[in-house]
Each structure stands twice: as structure tokens, then as C-alpha cells.
Length: 381
Image (tube, rainbow, N blue to C red; front, side, top):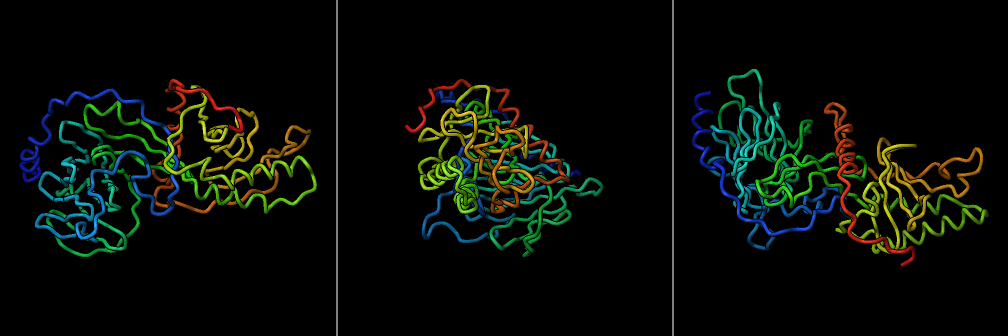
């Protein structure tokens, strides 16, 4: 522990509070964005910045992890050092982050989060993952440090000493955080099917108003693939059902316009999780009722959705039954179309009680009730 204390003392000047520069007024950050990526999903798709890494450039960005005297450098230029004070990450943006042996995260400037008693994984903007395992009972709390990128992994630390060894890219069952912004905006990512919830864990002082406390990322590709399959599942002479199928087909044909990648959505109503899309459509997230949580697509201000995606458990797309109001009629027509399984590394894990946490983050958006800054477009516009 003497070595740890000495190393942490050496790092303390980096953690000393600094006077933040005056921040210019900024608009409230969006609470939901659309992304078209599947696996792996780059952190830049979250709309929260590049993560403080260097942009890709031919001849300038290394293709793999590179050893250094005290650790390694990732392809995006993040320096990872194993010190007595813990594991230090220095980003090309000059942001510095320390994972201390007691499980706390420290930002230069005084920001602290944790503790993460068993350790954690940090996802970086260049696709690398830093895995730090901590021990509660051993003399050396810092048990191991591994860095993975693609199909390659290296071990930097094992039980009190530095090592330089190749490792196998294995399963990580612990807490996972994503380094966004300049590397110092840390979010916990948990996915419910194609919906990723991002809960802010740590942010540099002065940036609280510029970063959302919660952000939702909708991965549209699996949803649209199921949407395109729905018309092929239904063959019927019923005119109402044929009209509903035709409307779904029209949405599938115009998907790039209605659900464009990178779009930041605004609320349609301040007290509902319902957002305005292009072309007179709206997207709603329901936390109650059949197969909740569900994402629902509406034509304008309609009270009944055209199609719904059940996103928990076994995600699937369902065509709304135009005769649902008839006695004994079901909510949906048919058995639904399964969604392609995506982002397995972010999916909820029961052992960490992540589903209640993700749903809690979503419910927090309902309570915030942002001011709606624009009127709804009329349907068909």
C-alpha cells in the first residue's frame, strides 16, 4: 500500500481543481439520436464527441496497439500507463483519467466517480477496450490490466508488477463505461435490443450543461430490416389491413428520409417520450403495456401506431391491427418479425441488475420534461 500511496501522491497535482474557462451558452443537448451502425458500434455514433482520440489518417495512425515502457498506446493515440497510483489514460485531447486501486475514477480538475470495487472496462473512441480487474482481499488491489483492440489483446499488469504479454480476447462480465467527449465524458451503456441507454457517470467540471445526463441511441438498421419484412408476412384481401401494409411499405421505402442516421430528435410533447421525425411521423417509447418497453411509429399525431418494436427479451416488429378496437381483437396482426440480434456486448445482464437501471434512466427523461422548442409538423408534410 506504500507504493500505491506514493504513486497517488505523485498524481495529485493532476487532480488539483482548476478554474474552468467561461463557457458559452449552448442549446440543451438532445436526449435521443438515431444510428445506423450495427457491430461494432463506434462511440462517435452516440453523438457525444469522438472520445478524445486522433482521427484516422493514412500513414499517421498506427494499425494496432503499440508497447511503451510503462504500458501501451492505442490506435487512436491514447496512452495507457500502469503506475503505483493506478492506471492512467492520457488522451490526444490532453484529457487525463486515472483508475485508482480503490476503484475510484479521477479526472484532472477534481471530478470523481465510483467506486467500481471489482474493476471496470473503458471503451475508447478508437475501438480499444481497457479492462482493469481489482481485488478486494489481496495485498495488491490492482490485479490485472488488459487492453484489447479487434482480435488482439495484450496484458500490461498482473498482481503488483508490469508485464508485456499477449492475451486472449475474452468475455467481460463487469461494469462497462464509454469514454466520450474529449475522453473525459464517461457514460454507462446498457442496451435493450436496438435501444442503447447511456447514463452519465462522470464529466469534467463546467461541462454539465453541455452533456446530457441520459441519452438514448436507437439502432435503426435491425428495426428497418424487420419493417421491410412485415409486408411479406401478411397476405390478405381485407382492405383496411392492405392499407396498413401499404403504409408500412411506404415507410420502409423512405426510411433514409424518415429515420436518417445521426438525427437528433426533439420531443413532440414535454410530458411524453414521443419525438418528431421527418415526413410527419413520430416515434414513441412506451414503458407500460404489452411487450413493454416498445418503440412505436406513428403517422403524425395519430393515437394508434402503424408498427411497434418490442425491444426487450426477444425483440420483434409487429404490425398494428387496424381492427384492434373490435371485441376480442388482438393488438397486433400476426406473430411479428424477429429483429436481428445486435450489440451483444451492451445487452442487459441480469447478474448486474442492468435492466432496472436502464429503465430507470429512461424514466428519468420523463421527469425532466424539456421545453418543446418547435411545433409538430402536420402529417404528410
